[in-house]
Length: 272
Image (tube, rainbow, N blue to C red; front, side, top):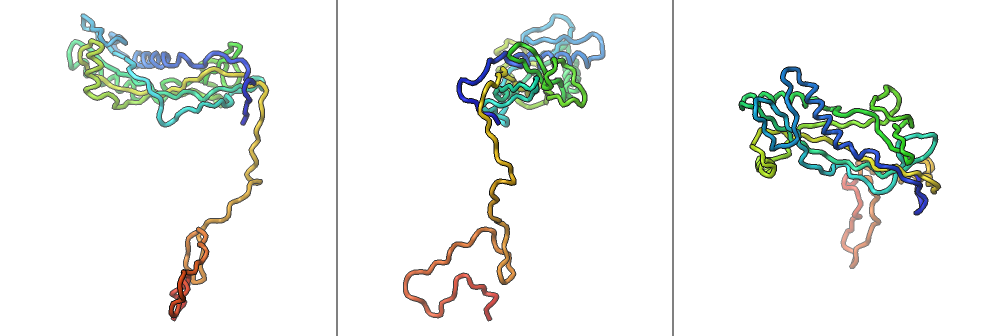
């Protein structure tokens, strides 16, 4: 782990993934169009208020909300970036982990056609564990785009190469209530349509920073650290298993001594 004093950071480059949100939207468009095998092909629209004047079938893909992932909150301190470029060390802040919520709507001339189109869209987006699957991209301070191996970045994943891969999935979620959907369509001045809500989880990477000269902190090895005392169960002279905690010291109650006193820690089984 490397700790850097103030003023020791080198030059910073551009953010590594400022356009990943738009790329997710384009990937959803491409997946819907690639899965269609009939004629004519449906039209992709992002404006909910658009209504065709003919029998054209329309698929609406509208991102309506962005929220930070509550389960994986990012940290503020710098960490070493997971890449190797000629032995140089680069730092960056942990990526910003966010959830993108999309509303998928359909339109057709007849309601039955719209319902069939909606069912087809559900099946087309059902198996989207790898909506985007590519090597993770890093932008160096000198402007080069490289992968985690330090090679020129390409969207193709090399098998068994040890690359750090960016994986973005899409999941069907129940995010909008009927009242929320009514407000969404009313604000957009769009008619009511059947809709689905999907969630995509992405990581936004900021700029890389040259490490420069810093102080290295080395942690001791586990075998050199002091071992804590055992806290497991113990066995009493009578054979009973007692708790693992240490017994408190025996205390003498105040006042005169009673008749035939019995020790507090005596074992009743040992007596006649």
